Image (cartoon, rainbow, N blue to C red; front, side, top):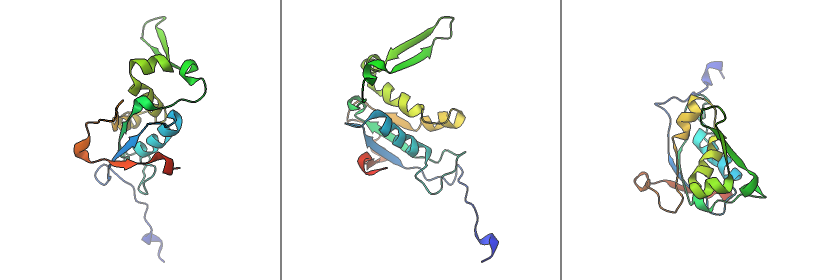
Amino acid sequence: MDALSYKTVSANKATVNKEWVLIDAEGQTLGRMSSIVAKFLRGKYKPSFTPHVDCGDNVVIINAAKVQLSGNKWTEKSYIRHTGYPGGQRSLTARELYEKDPTRVVEAAVKGMLPKNKLGSAIFRNLKVYAGAEHDQEAQKPRAINLNEIK
């Protein structure tokens, strides 16, 4: 064996193979589902994973309104934001945010599991979340994934 026969393959924008994945959130626990979705978005399940490249899949989540939270998280979990003005810190509980828009609860959970840099922002754009069973990505023919079979 000569030492030059093994080369580390590093993916780039031109060589990445992106797919569309469909995930049904009905009956799923928010955090467990979000960590799997973050891995798909990041591309960690792929053998060609490269940390500094957006090599993950495009993910479509349906039935976000039927996601579950365990324990007292509906009343005790808080989402904090700041308006930018002095004394402008605002917070919502999970129940209040869910009543405004159920998709924002799922988006916030997934976004918190992605890198906090430009790459994380670019990867987050590959996520589409829908409250109901209908979605606008029929033309992309997403492959349905059963989360109960994935570890």
